[in-house]
Image (cartoon, rainbow, N blue to C red; front, side, top):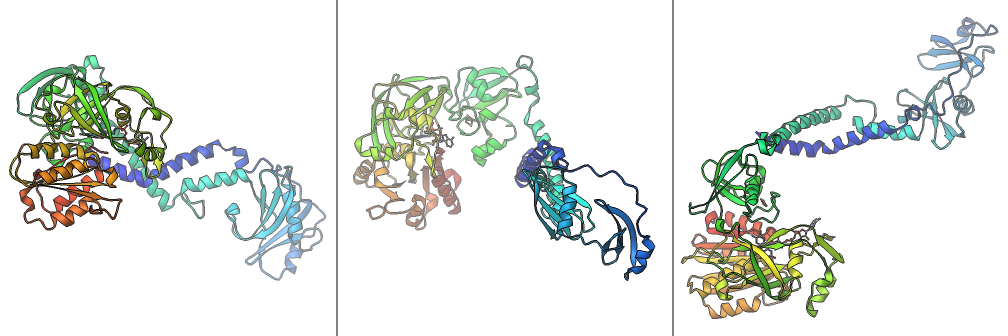
Length: 606
Ligand SMILES: Cc1cc2nc3c(=O)[nH]c(=O)nc-3n(C[C@H](O)[C@H](O)[C@H](O)COP(=O)(O)OP(=O)(O)OC[C@H]3O[C@@H](n4cnc5c(N)ncnc54)[C@H](O)[C@@H]3O)c2cc1C
Ligand code: FES
């Protein structure tokens, strides 16, 4: 029920979230405003003391006899010092001077004097006019006199046609009234707090509060309310994917598997430090796996969830658990390496070759990645050296003069060449994440900045290798499709296949913006010339008029390969590139009926 509840809560929240903010904000503003000013009492003179009715007036009976219309009500009153009879008929109200028996015309001059009498502020009358019913005198039906005073509050006095003072309005009241309108959601009359809009929003808000309380409680586990030392411990058995037992650790109930392993010095791969956003800390639960959470579903494919895979940083040790980890033997290892060379391949792509201190084992296979440990640092843009031809591209960035990274981080980088072809070196292809995106300048990436600041001779630490992106050897035709730094693992795989004597057809389609942005073009062309079973095609999305096809790589591949291929089911696909390209390619292959298990891909999320 919780996932549904979360989904409905999210959408209802989106629908009425703005009104909730308006309710709180308008409530706050109204409560902060001066109540005396809002009521218009600041400049309002106290009501005149009740006066006795004078003796020297004409009897009302004789006046009524003179009236031709049928009078329904006759009452007495005062217009300042003048006693008046108010004769109300169906059609009109007459004011009669009780002493002279003359009709009193309530004109602008009299309205001004009456308003002035009810006013004790510093202002003078600016204008007086007869107006139709207005929002400011909305409680009264029909025409009213509006008398405006020139004072700091823009006081406006409203009078009935019988000379009664209705309201004193001012700037503070107008502000209050605007927020009152937002509060009760009556945008026309500003009076009706039973209107259907406010009732629906209130019901939605109430439901949102109840479901929020529900979700709050379900997001806690009981263990979180109990201090760690009282929680007892649980056993975590770690297996390799082949089922062999690697290690057993104990941790407090309620800890995540990620932190339980970290406490023992075992580091699962992670780009987000346990923040449930990178998806690298995947483990497989042996036996019954707990229900997948929304973070699991967001980052792991349905088939992996079905197979019992979960994010370790989101997997609680509520009971003893048996898990499988890839690269299990490597979890505890931190390796030293020295930077052997750094080569700028394009303005923002660098080949970084590391000489590891230890000899590399067979698990450093094409498709795997290592995690570079990025120490806390402070760096300036002058520390990133570039060849002259790349300087204009760097000058177009708005990098801060200095930026920092406050704590140890780990960042993943794929091997870009098979280690047996590099004499045991780790060759990496790294893109500088400069943060310029859609007209905005975000801070540059912390890990890629560090790598771009490295020079030959620098020392660093890394862990790994990790990952399950790997070649499936065999005779099936292989189609590699990539873009950006997706070149790294695909290049390593292609080179490994070709140089180990693979004879099946191998195609590599690579997308870049321009020729200048594409790394290893000459190398790929040389491989295509040397190996008849290998074809290579560069696709350019931003540069026309070259020998290379123009367009988005997934679209060009669809038109030139997939639509006309006689048997797509006989092919294996290997994909790696920017998230949008990857998503489009996966959707396209699915649409074309290619089975999921014939498609291997690595998502760098950049
Ligand atoms: C399995 C795997 C293999 C990988 N292999 C490679 C590889 O071979 N080569 C490679 O180059 N990369 C690779 N990556 C990606 C790499 O691990 C890093 O994710 C990448 O280098 C970016 O890390 P960063 O620390 O530089 O950026 P981060 O500091 O993590 O920032 C990420 C992005 O956010 C932007 N940003 C920063 N602050 C903000 C903000 N406030 N608002 C909005 N945006 C912001 C940054 O500019 C940057 O573009 C791989 C990733 C995975 C998961
Ligand atoms: S560590 Fe990144 S998702 Fe778990």
